[in-house]
Length: 165
Image 1 (cartoon, helix red, strand yellow):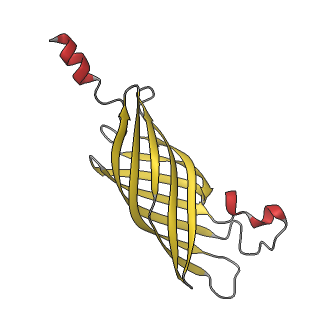
Image 2 (cartoon, helix red, strand yellow):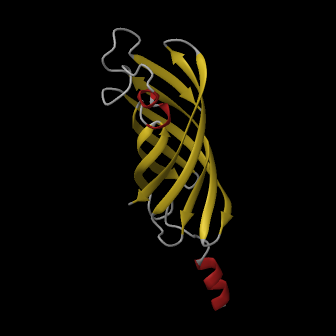
């Protein structure tokens, strides 16, 4: 009987999404910035990002291109609804997620086309640990369609870490 209790007690390898519902962290990629995740159901979460457009992989100033639309006066905000499912559970838990959402990008110091609206569909992997049980490391790719000011396809993505409270 105690063996059954030990196995049942180890079913949850992490507190992320179970006992701790809100995570805050950083992401490096496109965009680079802050990230948050709020679990609203056992397999569903809202994912938020606040970034500085033009830093990380999209930094045109680093390779001597025109960089007047990049820097601290530009930013991005995204929100996605995620469906998350378990792949592996043990000392660590590996999940995958897919979602749908949107992103707004604003450009400072510009004369026209200062705002972009983007539809995105993120897919990624989330790694959570038994010890520490408050940590999540994630990787995400988000195929995206820019809707305003024109219509084109791009791919966003990043690697990040969140700490759960």
